[in-house]
Length: 250
Image (cartoon, rainbow, N blue to C red; front, side, top):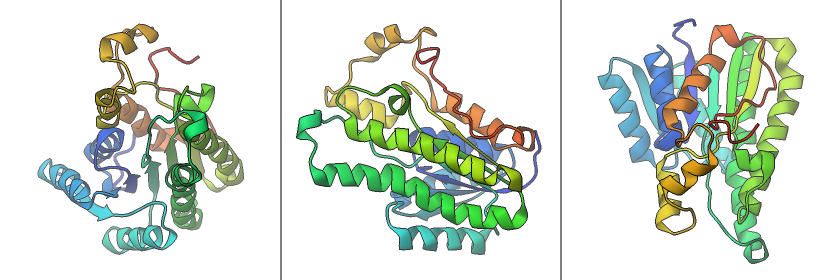
C-alpha cells in the first residue's frame, strides 16, 4: 500500500472505531484531520498521533449542521490542503422500542447518521472530483443489513448509509474515486459499553456466542480494512459492502 502523504478526514475520530481508524491512517503516513463533536477528544487523538510522529489536527464539528460541516472542511483545506480520503464514522446509537420512538428522536438519528454522512460526502467529493482521485469509506452497521430489535431508527439510518454509498459509488467510479461501506457487527467500544451499562445489551460473554469467531471485534479490526480501502491498491473496489463481523453476518 502506498505511504503517500495524502489528506484524510475521519469523522467521529475522537473515540471508538473512528479513533482506531484515525490512528491507523496516521501510522500509514496520512495527514489526518480528526473530526468529532467532542472537540477535546478530537484534539487528544490528534496530539497522540503527533506524539507518534504523525501529522494530525483536531476539529470540532456537528456533522448534522451543514454550515458547521462546511467550516470544518474548509479548516482542513487551510491546514492540509484538499481532502483526498474520507472515513465517515460519526454516529449515534441507542435502543428504543419502535412504538416509543418519538418524531424528534427519529429526526435526530437521521440528522446525525444519514444526513451527516451525506454532507461530508458532498464536501469531500468536490475536492476528489477535481483531483480525479479519492477514497471514501462509510461506516454503516450490520443493523442496516439485517435490522436490529429496538433499533428501528438506527437500523434505518445505517441501511440508508449503505444505499447512499452504493449510489454515490456508481456516480463517481469513473472519476478515479473509490467509495465503499464497512458494516461492523459487535465492536468493543465506548458506545457498546455504554449500552451494556444501561442494560440495553448483554455482557460480552453472551454476545460472543452469536459470533462464529468467538470474540468481539475491535476498532483495530475495522481500521485494518479501512486502511486497505483508503489505499492506492483499492482503486478497483467500488460500491462494496464489506463486513467486519467475525462471521456473524454472511
